[in-house]
Length: 357
Image (cartoon, rainbow, N blue to C red; front, side, top):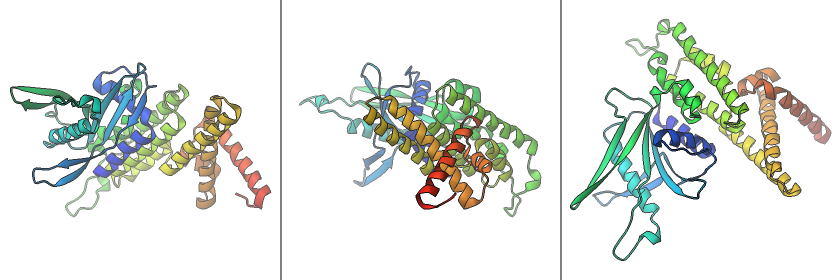
């Protein structure tokens, strides 16, 4: 799996589905946030001065501030690592130092005193071995004393599906496939050709059923209000993306999972669904002077956005309406509303300019 793909998935969820990072913080740092707190994403680019005088740009995975119900701020820094190595602690310290400097408040600078506030830092390990520690320590020796802090290590492969959903760790779902990495990679012969005869379909079928459970649990989480439609679509998109990168040419697994995960929906389409809904809701809220307009508009925009995506697959790819909905992953409860919206759009288009879907 390319590091750029899991980095992209991590960053996408952080920026597009920011509230989903709060349960991760609760789990990694033993916090007790409700999930309704404000989260402010910080700039991930840092510039490090090397011993040679060269300035190098470093990009951290996640740096953000959570403001609790009492107005108190806490800064966090999380790195997601595919294969942690001996350089990780050095990189964490570099990032933490720069974050502390970037957040330095003028009030903390005195004529004879300065206070640097380091972030609460953790590492998410997508892979681990018996030697991978549960936590790491960064110790800084200063004249006559020292300071040190712990860095908890979250081992994704130790989490069951039940634990992920119980703790609302939807952020981890795209990386759940790492639990089965050895089972999903196809074997190759001496010449580098894939040996399809070595495909263990029975084992792969069990993995595929796990993703049927994931889809069902995501639907139930949405019904309970633990995750919204946009977040669910984004998580499913990241699941498909990470799996495609990790499993490479294992089409048997990819096609099997697609039956339950609904194929792929472009991230731009998911963003359009969310943004259009928000804009409609804000306009309605301003016109009627009530906050409920935002929520209602969001729902309208989601249905219309999905209807547009379904229509696009029907007209450009020749799919039937049911096939298009299966590809996008429209749940049974939403299909009637989407079908109605498609009919409304078709009628409006025919009346306006004679265009038919």
